[in-house]
Length: 112
Picture (cartoon, rainbow, N blue to C red):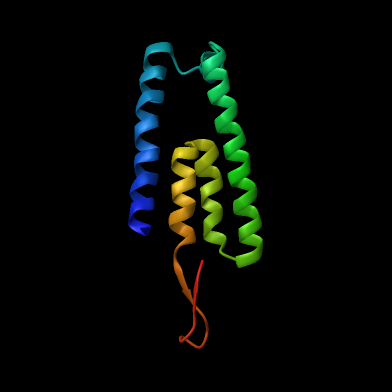
């Protein structure tokens, strides 16, 4: 399952980025113009807010789990979420969360 999450994170980075880059090439590299386009109608505004709330919830979950498990590598998913999108950040975090960490005695395993 871990590889599936990694593949979804890669797909979640590449697929949306294709559309963003296409939009920027057609409309110029103006970030504020893109933000305005996200709010072109009620449907797109609703989608923006849906993804914003999901990104905030994911960030809080990552921070809470990192404080508990000390799996600091998972923090990489926060900038991935806000710089690329939830479609990359969530599966990336699930991929990183599922790594197996061995304790000092090498007999017990913690599966985060």
